Image 1 (cartoon, rainbow, N blue to C red):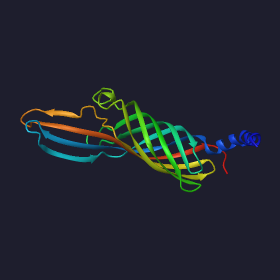
Image 2: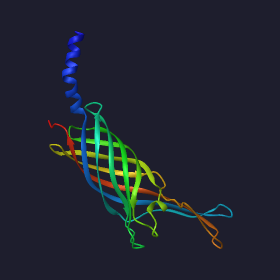
Image 3: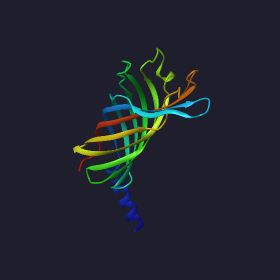
Length: 212
């Protein structure tokens, strides 16, 4: 009996594994933005003078990459990604658009609602590759060299091995280096700023696996 079970595992195990796990590539666009939280505080008594939240103007940037999807079961899976991500914003007020290029490594958990529809959520870490020169200096003189955050989204199979994915990316790290600017007298204020990335991502996916 044990020999029979071992024989079945050797023969069918790789086939089952291949059906659950696969490689894939994707390409699409990010509708990118930045969220800014700011607070003016009096340096003399610590009182808050003004605070608020605003968003920049949206900017469309490319994204592409590859991934490995490890199927835990017919319902659950984990996906490891390596992604080029174009982020930033359109600066209509100053006339200079800001581009930040990242090499991003997302790790996402996938739940299959139906055979062709799934939802996902996870976390990512990014490393700055370059971007717009600000005041004739590299972008890492203004923004941090890395970023991290979370993402949520969904994926739907279109035709054979092609799928469409829509994700919302939420940066958690304050990527602004000068987050504690001091204004001299007579204002006597400290400005605390937090800049975080945001993006609505649309990608077309090709999965290297057999279709049923």
